[in-house]
Length: 192
Image (tube, helix red, strand yellow):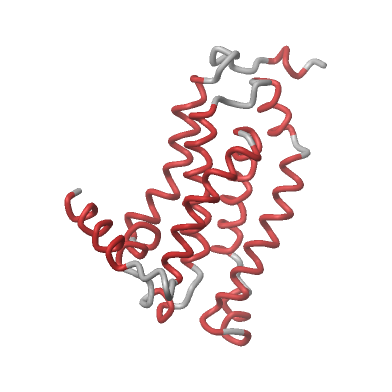
């Protein structure tokens, strides 16, 4: 923990406001997007988007022709991977937002989560998104990022935490829904 705090301190002292780096933009995006994202979307929509992110990540990681395309099209596959990721995410988002998952979330909790849940989900969602997109970068570009950015978003432990933390949060926070008392959906909910 002390090495992490030392990294944060070193990073804060190394910021040059006259010539900002990509690291600074990444961290500003993380902070601003986490706040604005949660306020504008709400818990249920963030959960639907997170599920779409996981599905899109699975597609990018398992598309057989993507390796061939990336070898021919661009530098180490960033453009092709990013395009497939965004394209499949958009498709899944539209399909999921009109699916039974979205309906079940809104019926189970009409209040759409409290501010703490929304804040946690938005921070985890934005962190997961940054980790995914940065993982598509070529190694030469990753090497240019600050050690703290690499450690938090791109290290094996960092990527694992960003992948697993939203799932853990969904499990832990499912029973803490305001208004619904953690009520589980039953057969009677589908009889309408």
